[in-house]
Length: 219
Image (cartoon, rainbow, N blue to C red):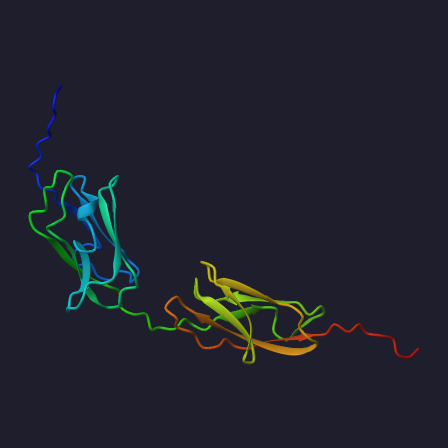
């Protein structure tokens, strides 16, 4: 019977890396990927051969390494968010091998820098409805307004939290408060962005709830 042997003396190469070498402003939640020139042995792509370390020095970050044979892409997924404003060095070790056992000629190493920390608070949100000093007759109030897109809007009556909502892409938000007792109620709102920065409080908006029907007292 015939015996077929495939000769493969070509070493694999890394064709593309993400983030790119010397990239800046990389998201702290980013993964690191590398694409190879040919199918690779998944067994050769592990946390020992695919690493990410702070460029300034230190141990390799805890991470999960996976290989997709369909795309020839290896992915390093850090177990925790990267530090902001920090340079990292990624390495694909020279032990990474193709299916025939050919290894990279040399390790592929590149560096990138994460985005700086966001310490800027959003602008104070606006409460635009109901109208200021208006009346409500059923104790159910829907307050709405605008804030930084995707920020978390928190509604307060004094220091008491009355609800939260996420501002839409156009900045609009609304929060409904039910069971509001009769009397004047003044509400303020704050906005918190994805980095955890919280705005100053909005201007107060006062609404008076009056659920008591009038009566004729004397005729």
